[in-house]
Amino acid sequence: MATAMSVSAVTPAAAAVSRRRTMVCVPATARAPREMAEELAAAAALGADLAELRLDCLAGFAPRRDLPVILAKPRPLPALVTYRPKWEGGKYEGDDESRFEALLLAMELGAEYVDVELKVADKFMKLISGRKPDNCKLIVSSHNYESTPSSEELANLVAQIQATGADIVKIATTATEIVDVAKMFQILVHCQVPIIGLVMNDRGFISRVLCPKYGGFLTFGSLKKGKESAPAQPTAADLINVYNIRQIGPDTKVFGIIGKPVGHSKSPILHNEAFRSVGFNAVYVPFLVDDLAKFLNTYSSPDFAGFSCTIPHKEAAVRCCDEVDPIARDIGAVNTIVRRPDGKLVGYNTDYVGAISAIEDGIRAFEQRDPDTSPLAGRLFVVIGAGGAGKALAYGAKEKGARVVIANRTFARAQELANLIGGPALTLADLENYHPEEGMILANTTAIGMHPNVNETPLSKQALKSYAVVFDAVYTPKETRLLREAAECGATVVSGLEMFIRQAMGQFEHFTGMPVDDYKFRAIGNTMTPL
Image 1 (cartoon, rainbow, N blue to C red):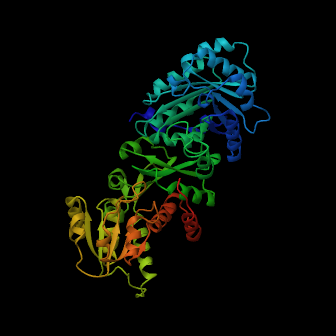
Image 2 (image 1 turned 90 degrees about the vertical axis):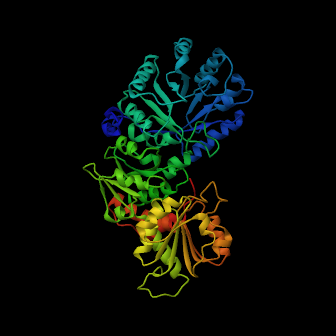
Image 3 (image 1 turned 180 degrees about the horizontal axis):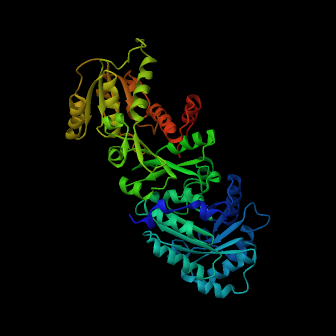
């Protein structure tokens, strides 16, 4: 990847020194004027800095009747007034003249900001010539719902918007892959005027959280889930309370979870709260990644200091790291990557300790055994899945003296791992009738049963009657169908949340260099609610 598109070339400290704090703006999208005014008040209660009043969302909008209601003073927040036409992604289908008159009236009624589209900016500027109040700032915006242009094209677009006389530049593009966001970060850093630069959809999510690091003027956060005004827009509450956006600045280190999918992960909740509890200047975000090597090459700045890896990148991470911890190499999977000050990537695996210790403690809570001997020793341990997590569980169980069996939908994958571990391989169909002995342990390491597919399970309830202990690496939901049915069959069950918390403790120590406070970390993990 060319250096111009790599975040390694971005120096946020130099560019953002003179800029004000990035504001959190909540879109108000109600259909009635009084409800929109109430949404503005609700946004203020959340801690937002301003509200975007989306006039195109109002039903039967009559400017001279409705704007005095919506913009009545005193207002709890400054107002950004937008009247977006359908051709730019909004809902307004009328003529520009009527729309412009409404925006001009909003200015006269004291709106602090007004947004108009680049395509018609020159026409609007002629209309308001000499009539724009001094306390109103004009945002000229451009939206691309298909892709993110090259860095050079984005720079030209900024210049084009500046030439209209805009007070603030706004560019919103769409990510086809997460590396597209690096181009927007470049633009934010080098722009000499106030700029809003966001990349839409799940692969562009980090642009909405990390924009304070690169000097973005504002970011948008919805009033609540379901009230988004653009694809993959976080809630204002999550921006403020989960991602601690008020504390993000040029020197903030960036960590995150690399996966596909990744939206279900509770890692941002856990790690961000853990960082905050020890005063560590860092933010932890979800990275929806298609190509791991390309991602790591693009976000190669020392500020992108560490990553958690989940499905399907744990095995690829071994190949992408400059150095790999011997245990992680033996397992063949990395779930933790740390970027050293010299830029080298070092891979570790905290999955195996997290999962195996959780299963051992789960068994010890119900079975009286020699405390000096692992409760896994000598027992038949069936692992469902042959990916990164499956490898970690199989390795850990074998190290504890268990006899490991690998079951997988694809027999060839099961056989490959089984050969490495020195045990038999089965298909999931074979597993339905597998019952060679009593007291077996089952560990599901696949994504079967994970939200939103909560009614799925890797094994029938009838087959579960053969197991004394059942572990599920899936932790969303906390009680999966597999665990619920296993408990109904009388098995000891161990939640994936336990593995999640324990492996995250190891990651926290790698990320921060600080010892983990076990009690505090567990308290955070056990009180998490989904993003």
